[in-house]
Length: 498
Picture 1 (cartoon, rainbow, N blue to C red):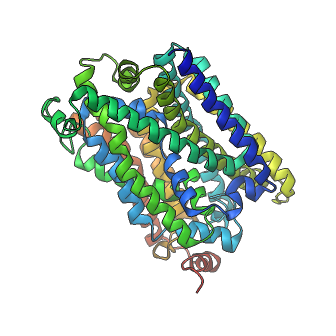
Picture 2 (picture 1 turned 135 degrees about the vertical axis):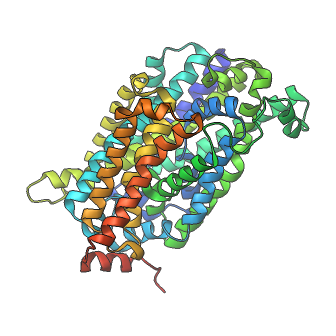
Picture 3 (picture 1 turned 180 degrees about the vertical axis):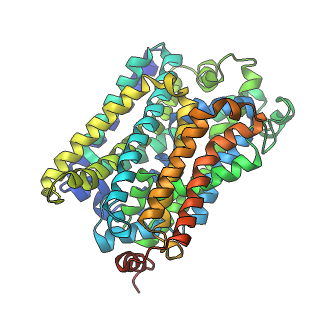
């Protein structure tokens, strides 16, 4: 990176800080800080949902998969997310908005006290918050890797730089700052992504390279399923994405909660689905073409960064790097806001003897403090990512495998079909999923590794979520819960008012 690149990157960080300070003027209450006061336009909510759904890990871990396995990542990741949102758009997004409208919730877990009970809510809150620390830590690690490749900045300083800027605007501006910076970051990354696409096509023969490169790439790179990324893995990941992107991942639920109405929440989900269907084709093409321009790389996670350095002049390198950071900062800031909402609205009141929430001003202050602490802890995890399997291990294995046991009770608890699955089903589902992950990851890893290569990743990811789903249904059938308050809640959020 040259001086011009650093100027572009510095200007980007300053713009993010400025938008955070401006957003502070819109934050007067805890509701403003955590849910934008329920006044976020559907198009902003949809773009923010999209930007908050992936980070610069895409340009590190997923770039490595695109380099080694080719087109399959578009099928099991991008198409899977788009399909998951279409499947859930008429079921979950509107219910999240109605929970805020009719029950006044701010945190995605608030309604669980009525739907199940306090112990169930607390188990999901504590475990989910802990899991998110590791997930966000992986995002910082990915950003640090990119900065190290581009500019030789040590990982410690890369984590501190991106983390500190994100921390500043998140603590000050809350969800409004997150959404507004998401919008500006979306514009930046669209421009940067198109620049990268054009540069790669120019090197490979122009527009025709979009279809001619596939015959020149290694065998299997044009297939929808290859190696460990089989059709079975894609189906499992579709289930995980359906749970995650429809609100099982708390920061994504907040985008729907912040929508003014159920109709707006559905439109936001469909906009995000459309972006996932189209935009990754632009992002991934340089990654798919990388083996032709950078053959035999020892570390495929560096392929996108090395490609950028090879093809782009000064100034544009800084722009592309800003676009990569945009994803990480969008996702981590929204995660921090969601976790803070859970801590302030659900965990801290449960620790008080009277179970009462403090005043609104105290909640707002607590939210800012929790945001700061969460981001600081996740930055610490980032500096120890190698102990957890690196970026790939944290993103695909840890988070992909453990999101199901937390999301299943959250999402299915909204539906009348599962009204007989009560607290026992929710806790058993969570416990069995966590135990399944522990057995697969720590007790029987050698036996799992001895299976055919195309089954190892599938079993690691599928085991916990399928176990959780089965137990949630089975316990509800064998030991049905009959709770009038839970039934009334499900009915209350079922449909929009006439």
